Length: 284
Ligand SMILES: Cc1cc2nc3c(=O)[nH]c(=O)nc-3n(C[C@H](O)[C@H](O)[C@H](O)COP(=O)(O)O)c2cc1C
Image 1 (cartoon, helix red, strand yellow):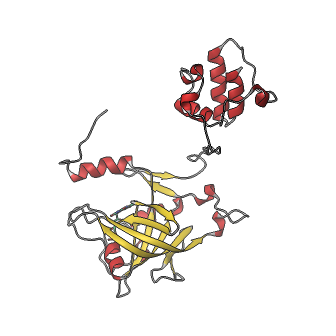
Image 2: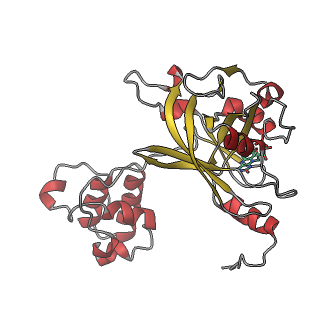
Image 3: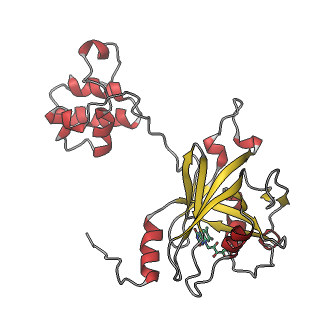
């Protein structure tokens, strides 16, 4: 493995390594306003949720790498501590990127990027109508992480209102994960799209206790066929299944003496989330 010591490494290299590996990152398209009423819009992918009680999200507006000057978003939040964080879906990604151009403070990036501004209910900055989820936020703190170019300014926001487009909701009013079609930023010019081609499910280990990989039988743990993911799936049971628990499960045909074949079939069953059937083939 190559090991990189950050101390003394040029900022641009630190940026490239970290931005390309801490990925994908969700994108906050942040609408703010200054005290003169100038509206600003810019995307930030140093962005995430940090708690729900209270509901706090944060993003970081770094000081310019070239001039060390604050970005307009940071300037505005220091003047008017309100923001709308608009989430970015695939249909908006090019316009969101366009809104990252460093226009002067008085230029409204809604206009430049072709977004539609709609009034918020509680805060002064407008919302992006095209965004499927819009968070009306009150800034609660700004933590400066340094004074030189590239230094972050962690902006903590309390979410007061969540506006969600009807078309991304199920009939029960829950989020339809596939309909959201959000995008995320990776390194360089790369982005990811959250749709049925890129999303998959990992069932939660629902049990209060899971035996863990260390307690799997030796032949399973040292299998040349089963992967780390396979072992972890098998290990998320409360106890080794008993023959009675497995008796009624219908599994594919295999030859009992052929360990390779049994492990291969178990892998295929695990890939279909049929964990107990995999156990039946392995414990036979
Ligand atoms: C997808 C995307 C994500 C970005 N994420 C960040 C970020 O997290 N922090 C940051 O300081 N700049 C980020 N930028 C760059 C800012 O959007 C850019 O500096 C912008 O001009 C800032 O606008 P403002 O001066 O109007 O606030 C990002 C740009 C793009 C296209």
